[in-house]
Image (cartoon, rainbow, N blue to C red):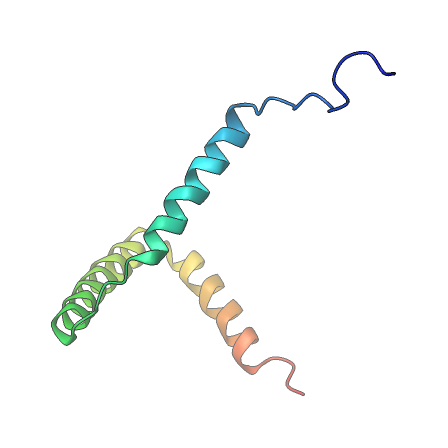
Length: 85
């Protein structure tokens, strides 16, 4: 007859494993609730995206030197008109 329990001892989870388990639990609960996205919500998101794009592009271009802008444009043109199959 074997001595002690025949079950193997469970390994304790570390902090990272506990964090992953908690996040998966939260994500599972979040997926259960559905939010209805309305046309107004879509319009507002699109407006915010346009505002950010207009500001960000202008500020980025202002920071670049003419050489950097030329290098970026050349790379984009090569990607666009480069090897076509």
